[in-house]
Length: 199
Length: 199
Image 1 (cartoon, rainbow over the protein chains, first blue to last red):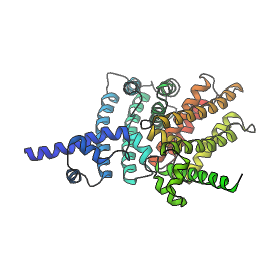
Image 2: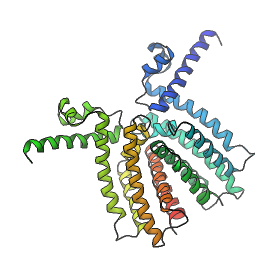
Image 3: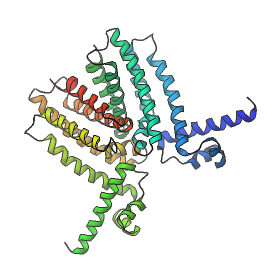
Image 4: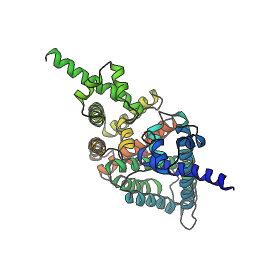
């Protein structure tokens, strides 16, 4: 890669990284392009060289966040050194620890933008739907594995269990953000694992 | 009431009503005071006569929305012509019908603002927490009644069941908004009533 191409690529990555950090805290509407440019010392023209619009920029941020989260999901949900049920617990524990460390702030970019932007931008809604469905399929795959080895109940389809796991988790994280404690997360984990999943 | 006092009161109510309608669709940040004033044909000075700030205005909107929702909750959850379990089902069915009628848009103002504003405004976060806790107590009361008459499982406290009912429901509504279908609501109801609540 020539240094010019390299620099161009670096600018784009820096915009996405910084935009993601700010959008995770402030949401879409409250995130100002000018604020991101000021943090990075990049001129406005450069932003519009890389992204058509703020919406288009947000799409790239969602994809970047998705890549990072998908890598984590794969690491946890496909780790055969643990049973499928243990992996699902590990997923919840990992995020509960993270949420506690950040005083229940920020939460999940996909959840935050879903709530904020689904009625505001059809293009963002579709992108968020795609990510949510793909993550759900990864949970369903892990659950199906647990049903096969007999440690997860089979009274419902893996898809139905993955749906309640994912949406229940999203609701619990939302509560944790507002009430500023992880009680709702603890309660979710207890109900989910003791009453719903474990065979 | 003199006509002057009456008119003053009407202006305040109109601002809150219109603000609520717009905020339910657009969220806090995207709602412009100017837009509300234009809809109503009210001068800017009048707004600041009634409300100190946009944040203060949002608090009044949350309280107004809460009043309306609490009345509905009381109507459904304390209707002794149905059993407690039937009332909880009726609550879900009522909101599912409403959500379907509005093509899964808007959702719940408390959930929307929780997700958008919890990290942005401490005063709004506290107001939203109060509402959420009070609603949860109403669900818990109905669940405790069902545990007493034996139709709801008693393996968990009414508070724990109310928490999972409320946060699971919030997560399912959020999913419905993003995926634009009520599949997540149907799945939540099935798991909640068949596997978690019914004794």
